[in-house]
Image (cartoon, rainbow over all chains, first blue to last red; front, side, top):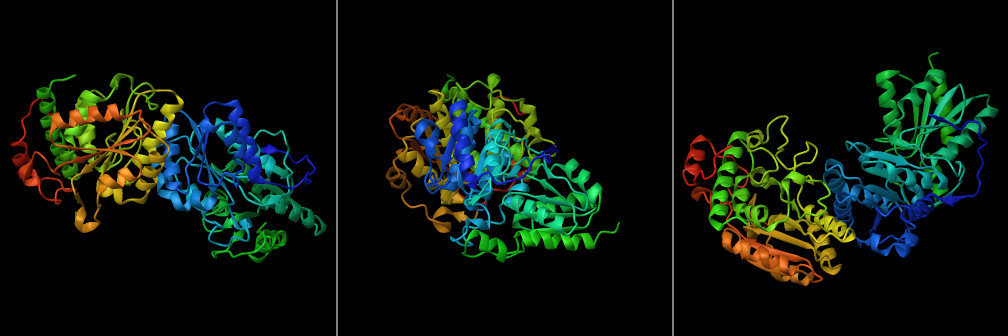
Amino acid sequence: MENLSNLNWENIGSKDTRSGFGDAIYELGKEREDVVALCADLTGSLKLEKFADEFPNRFFQIGIAEANMMGIAAGLATTGKVPFTGTFANFATGRVFDQIRQSIAYSEKNVKICASHAGITLGEDGASHQIMEDIALMKTLPGMTVINTCDYNQTFAATKAIAEWEGPVYLRFGRPKVPNFTPKDYKFKIGEALLLKEGSDVSIFATGHMVWKALEAAHALVEQGISAEVINIATIKPLDRDAIIESVLKTRCAVTAEEHQIIGGLGESIAGFLARNFPTPIEMVGMNDVFGESGTPEELMEKFGMGTKDIIEAVSLVIARKQF
Amino acid sequence: METIISLKAMGSQVRRDILRMVHGAKSGHPGGSLGCVELLVALYFDIMNHDPDTFEMSGLGQDVFLLSNGHISPAWYSVLARSGYFDIAELATFRKLNSRLQGHPATHEGVPGVRFASGSLGQGLSCAIGVALGKQLDEDENLVFVLMGDGEVQEGQVWEAAMFAGSKNVDNLIAIIDFNRKQIDGSTDDVMPLGDLKSKWETFGWKVLEMKGNDLEEVIDVLRLATLETGKDQPVMILMHTEMGFGVDFMMGTHKWHGVAPNDEQLQLALAQLNETIGDY
């Protein structure tokens, strides 16, 4: 686990995570001839314009045909290219699960499946587009690495890191502008948790857009006399098991926070691991087995139980359940 | 190149391999496998630029073949083994535990010659396009071949791929459809009529050729013609008219042998119709 708990967490200027992806892949395009990008009619949404303009021979516009895009990416990977596919998380996973399963994961292709507009913070477009099941789908595939980034800087760093990683990766990020707070220059280490704040009463394991809310919750909990440890699990698979054990050995209880269905999400991964190794009271903050609806990102996060106050409530519940 | 006589002898041996593999596994797909023997023998022993001894996943500097209709794996495994990718003795492990020769082709076990898993239909053409685009980036003038079943083109992804390749000038690609007009549940006309495939692919921007797929001389001639049609700003499709179960009288003219293994008696009846030309594995 990388320890960044000495840092003072503040928003250095809200930005969308997808721009972190777009800026990083443009840099990768300049650095590496083998990096290619594919897009299914969402070049602007994925912030791929700069890559497409600068490297037209390495950019493939596939049209609204995501299944074909996954297959073409698998083919390009076979020839030694490092393909990054770009579309919305909904169309990058649920629509093409079998293509990813057979042509990419089972065929062991070095494809980077990059997905924007994940989760309910997609907002006004409504539940058709708000996929909250994508982590569940991707983490079940053998050999698939699953990453959900929390801000612009982390998305930028993760995009650079997955280019160096051999094997298929699902990289999940979002649409709205959210606080940007992780260090600009840090090197993303796949599979390594980030200790954001040390604490002794409860471990909060958060991923994606919920990480900032977890920091807000931890700050608020200080006033209640509760010392919360905040750990960012950006890599959901493979899970940083050492970091999880190390933290709960100290705190003896945990809250997980994610913008995803509780069923099949990060919380279940952590709970499953702890149940087998160190049974620990856990509360899970996430989507509770329902579909979303239209609204602003903040309205939706609050309505569906993924606000800062929901983390605070979960902390109270789980501390009350502690045995010792 | 091999002589036609020796290629025909190879075909007979491959058919024996298919029957013995499926019989040995007590499962598999003999019908389509038998129908595609001439194509695979022609590709691997005559048409394709490939070297089993220097097989690499990237396929750089060589032609690349993909099997999209993965259920005819017995035919492909036999041809791969007979052309030197691995020992023919390994054919006896087909569909058995700890074998590299999975029921449907896979890369995980590291069998030489296989670059993609297949079995779930409709995906191979997209993968082939990706390899073709990779070759274009690498300025590698070798070709990509992909075989599909005719029932397989009922999958929507095939037409996504058809539209892409036809409109984006993927002209280092030769696709072949095994047009035997049969699928698991019956004839394609009964299950889901394919319509006029030639005009459909032409409308999607492809150069379309046709051939009698169980006539070895014609297969070689048309494959050569197809290679001459590459590099002309459009992909090439060959509609390959075959007979499911070709070479074994009681397996022809029916869809019943799509995915059924012969019993001991049926195996002997079938093998009696096919000369052991090179030697059984």
